Length: 196
Image (cartoon, rainbow, N blue to C red; front, side, top):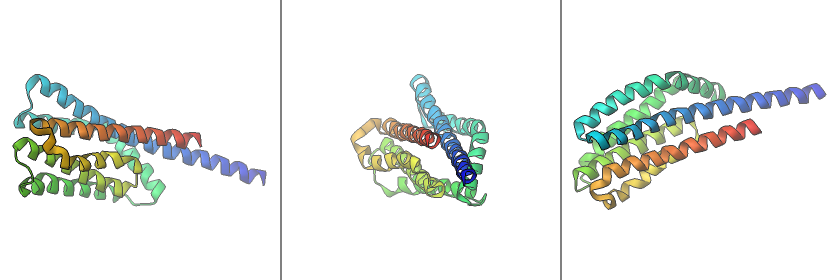
């Protein structure tokens, strides 16, 4: 009977470490994207943030962040698959959420005429894209820690007109705030999983 209790204790510790590792991988991924966001604002303060500059920055930034986090993302997915029993198709489900978010956020929302200035239009597109994409990703992964990453942008959409000609900048900081909270929640969950 003592052996069974000891085995149960060992298995619980292993499970806690698996959960903690997935949470840390999630936090690392969000922190890489947060770093890219903040880099954008640092550089745009020096060189401007016109559409061409922004497009070039994010095209290069997306490649760099994706390459830098590939190993972390692979481990995150592997642990998620082992925890949930979902198949490797989970990557395609996450990709689908980003495709849908892109189509709605960048394709449909700007054409709805919800805004009055180009700055507001871009801000609403950014927030819609991130909110929809990350909500879909959170549904696929089941990670409650991701809630601020999409809830912040979605709740920020109605407030875009208040930001006026700073709407695009404000939208970026709304997204950054949501990412910061997501990272904190992931790390708190990892800590709790290790401590249990």
